[in-house]
Image (cartoon, rainbow, N blue to C red; front, side, top):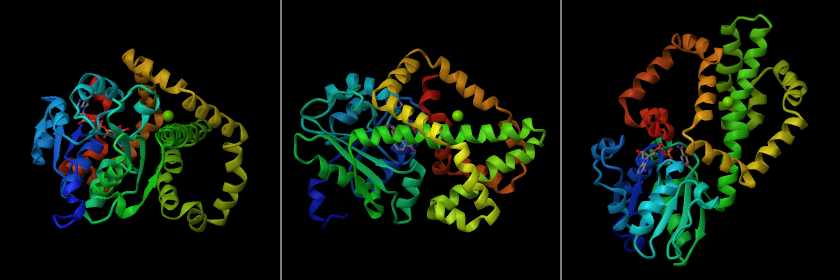
Amino acid sequence: MNASNPSQAAKPTIAVIGYGSQGRAHALNLRDSGFDVVVGLRPGGPTEVKALTDGFTVKTPAEAAANADLVAVLTPDMVQKKLYNDVLAANMKQGACLMFAHGLNVHFGMISPRADLDVALVAPKGPGALVRREYEIGRGVPCIYAVHQDPSGRAEELAKLYAAGLGGARANLIKTTFKEETETDLFGEQAVLCGGASALVQAGFEVLVEAGYQPEIAYYEVLHELKLIVDLFYEGGITRMLEFVSETAQYGDFVSGPRVINADTKARMKDILSEIQDGTFIQHWVAEYDAGLPNYRKFQQADIDHPIEKVGKELRAKMQWLQQNAAQATATPDAAQAAKPSTHPIAETA
Ligand code: NAD
Ligand code: MG
């Protein structure tokens, strides 16, 4: 995209609200793609200095939104309702576009956008640091996009323009709906990625340690080596993993995998999906958040206190390549964001 591009005239001015994992990557990529980008943040908030250092004009969310054709809401999900109701609803221009990176608030009716606004989402399938890094080397992270309401008739075009600005069009763009994006995203993180995988690792560790094996050995077997397996999944699916492991490992996989994850497990996954779909999960999560996160903190502490964390910390201290990564992470803002403890929504509300 450059000045000779005919779509240049139609390029919306963009306000990016929030400068965390996604916000920073979106703002930088969109600016490098030729968009006029302003960042909206609470004055004195934790990421203001970063946005200023990156050369952005930083305004309050109200001022940024008032002058933009497109407002990208990239704050933590749980503050978006208040941000929209208190700030964006009153300040966004007539006929502007309200853009999200996750459909949660709109899909579950926590935000009911003004009828004159186009409402869309563009969700990169990767963390912000990767969205930025891939863009910088001329590639892109695949994006999915969706339109919730389209009074202008241009919402889909705007979503695609935005996704292209992120670099997503260089990789793959898939059209979805707010419902599909929200429900599958929640299911994935709960049943498989975060909830399922961590519970599987903890249970495997407990079984070995309770049987009298050394925790150090158990750690290597059930947590450390998981990365090697996941890397193979990522590169070439389960087929590639099977190509790389021994025949003994394959046979053990075939006969024991279905005993761990069986029809009962699948039935519970379906229960989890039903509770996402019928709003039970979000109702519980909003109530928990509004109550000040009492159970959340208890669960978080239990994970942190699990014995696998103590032995893992000791063993990782002896993995030199990890020490190098940690040093780099503190030296480069992109990598530091991958860890992003300081901008976590929960950390902020604490
Ligand atoms: P984050 O926690 O990394 O950053 C949030 C930013 O919002 C910070 O700059 C913070 O200072 C700012 N902020 C917090 N409260 C605010 C307020 N009231 N007003 C203005 N700014 C405020 O968030 P994130 O992980 O980038 O998530 C942003 C959105 O992107 C969410 O909708 C999330 O679901 C979505 N998303 C995230 C990822 C990811 O990998 N992190 C991937 C896809 C989609
Ligand atoms: Mg867990």
